Amino acid sequence: MWQFFHKLGSPKWFYGIATRLMPWLLVGGIALLLAGVVWGLAFAPKDYLQGNSYRIIFIHVPTAFLAQSIYIMMAVAAVVTLVWRMKLADLFVRSVAPVGAVLTFLALFTGAVWGKPTWGTWWIWDARLTSMLILLFLYFGVIALAAAIADEKSSARAVAVLVLVGVVNIPIIKYSVEWWNTLHQPATFKLTERPTMPAEMWVPLLLAVLGLYLIFGWLACLRMQTGILVREKRTRWVQELVRTGGH
Amino acid sequence: MHPIRKKRLTIVLFLLAGVAVAVGLTTYALRQNINLFYDPTQIAAGEAPVDVRIRAGGMVEEGSVARDPESLKVVFNVTDFNQSVTVEYTGILPDLFAEGQGVVAMGRLQPDGRFVADQVLAKHDENYMPPEVSDALEKASAANGKPATTQTKDASY
Amino acid sequence: MMAFDSLAAFIAMEGHGPYVWTCYGVFFLFVGGLMAWSIRQRRDVMRSQLRELERDSTARAGREAQPAASFTRINPS
Image (cartoon, rainbow over all chains, first blue to last red; front, side, top):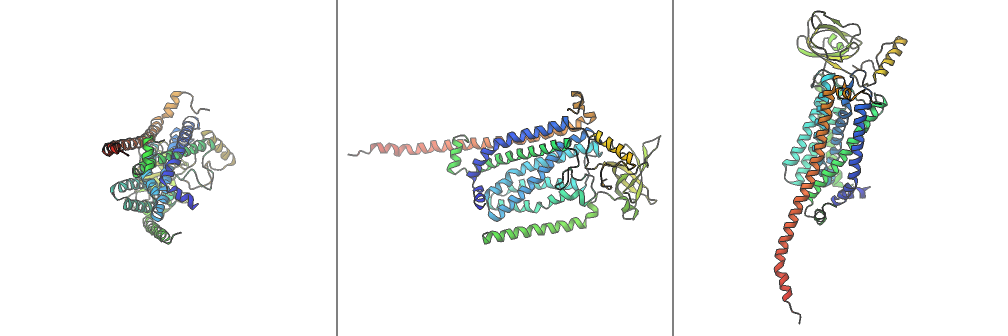
């Protein structure tokens, strides 16, 4: 296990694995996401209460879910950065923070557009919405801090500490709808219980979540490869790779 | 594990625990501000300030909605199945507003206990289902003589 | 089985069309944009590094031209 862990720290090894994984992630991700979205938009039955506006759930839940799990992954990578000083872990945080920011923005945006016809308002300062907005600002902070410090080592450490401090926001987002009175409803998917919707609604939702997860995996591989090319440009294997056009 | 790494890991864990405790205490101290609305029990117990803009939330009581035929004024009771508050509102209600549905009203509590709202938002629960299923559920519960609420939790407004 | 009778009904979504289609439009715009941007970033890095390497190798070739010529003068007799 430790051997695998150390191998994972090798940029060259990671670059090769990523190149091999990426086609699968991309094709699988697009296929699953499109299947889920088309099913959800055109074939799933409408909701008895909200009618067709609930169809926004098929992108709202995947973006919100990814926005939070990307942050958790970044926090794990931050621990690895601080304890083992693994450069690839720091690179992961830098590479995926913009992806997390975009997905958080999309979760907020789709939520606002969904809120207008159902709740009667675009925005309300309830605990769920506010903690999600804090998540967006945390992503912005990580991106800005990562760009602000020139020295690679101190930058990595500062970013990791910020990511770790921000991770306490994740349980707050998750449990906000249970701990406090909010306008936002509790979760549809729970780990221990059956989803609170019939299969012809939750199956396409699950497909869309998995699809977006795979697309995130592809994006993470691609963006980390870009980072590796920049950081390791003095090494022979990267120069070889650049000469042969990346193959 | 290498002793230096062990030390670093301990520091990281302490950092996390410290931040978690700090944030936990802060949110606990501010819990009344984080709560979006007062429920009818809190209002009946006098926890909500009078004549200050606050939000009240709960379920619209079955059979309590009275619309003024000449204006957009509507009066209804909001309940949490324990206490209830009378809400007055003049304006357009959201599409999802209905008896038995959750609402959050923003407005001022009057000294006589009425709540005069200037904004009413609809709140829905996490249960989604096709209309046919909902109809069938309603029929079944009507046959059993039970209220047509869809799920088990009675306070899921 | 389709949940809608016609394409027009699918677009209109019983009046919720503008909300639903705005969300899906923005979603695909941003996710697609993120993917295209990331591909371009890697391609640009590759290109600029390739240019750098080519410049270095021509410079090295120029520097090596002189001593390389001197080898030919060595006469192992």
